[in-house]
Length: 105
Image (cartoon, helix red, strand yellow):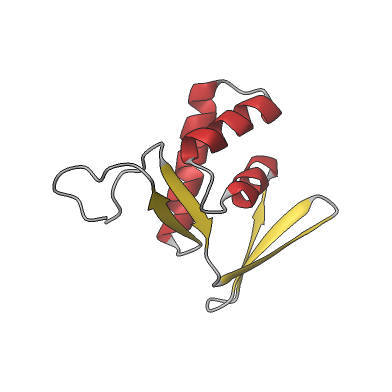
């Protein structure tokens, strides 16, 4: 089971997923599963920002600024998207912050 996401987590696109944006449409290809996933505009932005350097908090700030949605809505959507893609192996997570007691890094 995955630990809860934190604002200082830094999602990183997995090399096991190929992706391409054509005419504003971003599609992910899960190579092993031979599965295509289409992303909406927010999903595309999160995917592009998932470089292992940009924190979830920063990603949420960028989504709020670009899509003019309330911060709470943006945070919930970004967290759900990152959780779903982490669960299928499309994202790896890193953090710069301290690891809470009882959790493994």
